[in-house]
Length: 347
Image: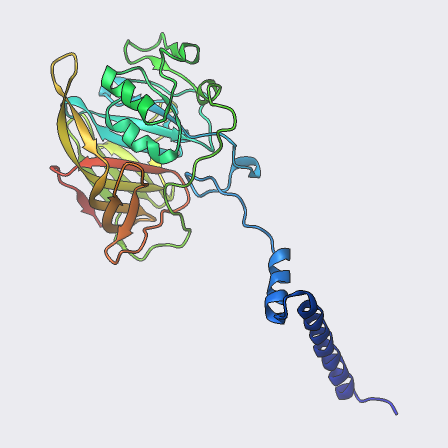
C-alpha cells in the first residue's frame, strides 16, 4: 500500500535519527565510551582554525601570514625642528615619552608592517629597555646614547642595532640639518635579526566589539609648549588624529598622524643623574608599577589603571571593575604621560 506524504516525512525523519544514532554508536566504540565527547571531538577536528592576526595590532596580516621576525623598535625625534617625521604611520605601536626640557621622543615599534624610511633617528633613554623588553628580544635602532643606556639595552636582552653597531643601515639626509637628519629603514635593520627569532607575543588584548564607555572625542596632553598634544576623534577616518595645539601633526608626505587607539598611561617621572649637553637632567618615566590609564577607541574613553608588577611582566590595562580593557584592532599610540600634569578629556 502506498505511503501518504505525511508517512514519507516520518520515514525520512526516522532515517535521520537512525543515522545519528549509528554515528554516535561508532564514535562510542573508539571514543573511550563517551559518545558526546567523541562527536564533539569530530566536529572540533573538522572546524577551521582562527585566521592569523598581527600580534601588535590584532589585524589580519598583509598576504595572510604573520612575518616570522622579531619586533623592531626605532627611536624617533620630536623637536619642532625634527618635524615632520617619516615612517610613523607604518608602526604597529608608538610610545611617546618625556625627555629633557619638556620635549618628547617616540619609540616606533614595527612587526607586521615595514617602512622604507624612518626619520629622524635619535638617541635612546633609560626607560626604553624597560618598555621594549615586553616585546621579547626586539631589535632596537637608535642614534647611540650615554654609557648607562647602552649597557642597559644589552643587559636586558635587546638586539642593539644602533647607528654605531649597524652603520650600514643608516644614512644622512642632505635636505635636513644635523643632527636631525639620520634615517634608516625597517628592511635595513631587520637584516641584523638573529636567525630563528620569531614574532613576539601580543602585548595588548584586541576586540572588534565596540566599548560601552563614556564619550571620548578628544584628549589634551600638554607635555610642554614644544609638545602641546591633542588627539581628536575623526568619524570620517574612524581614528584619532594628532594635533599640536591648533595645528595638525603631519608626516613628511603631508598626511596627518592618526591612531586607532590612544592609551594615556599616567606615570611617575623622576630626574636621573644623566644630563644632556646643556646640563639639563634626563628624566626617567617609571613604567613598572601601577597608575591611572585612559584608553581611547571608537570615540569612547575607558578609564581604569595600568598594572605591571615587575619589569618581566607585560603591562595590563584593566577597567574599574578589574576587567581587561580591549583595544580596537589597529595601530596604537601609548602616551607615557607625567602624573604631575593634567589630562583633559573632551566628550
